[in-house]
Image (cartoon, rainbow, N blue to C red; front, side, top):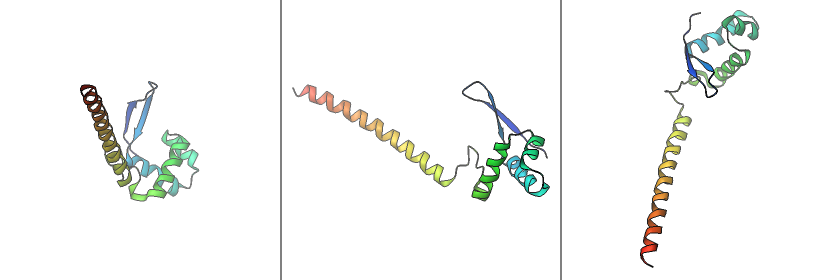
Length: 109
């Protein structure tokens, strides 16, 4: 099985491997088709047992929607992202209005 991994620096300065969607799907399919224990397949692929277990569970639960990647968010994640942006804008507007009110209340005294 051929795969591509990307590495990114984590907060602790440790390299974190990022596996492609195709690799994850193939790894889970290998567990199902080989008849080997999940831990053995994980060892052979050089990944942790827990990662393979989570990939398997995610694929079973979400099907084609599993492993969307950072650029392809699920609909729910997209809604959350948009709402967080709106909340930030609203907070900034509130802070500006507070400052304006304090300025005008000082002038009227």
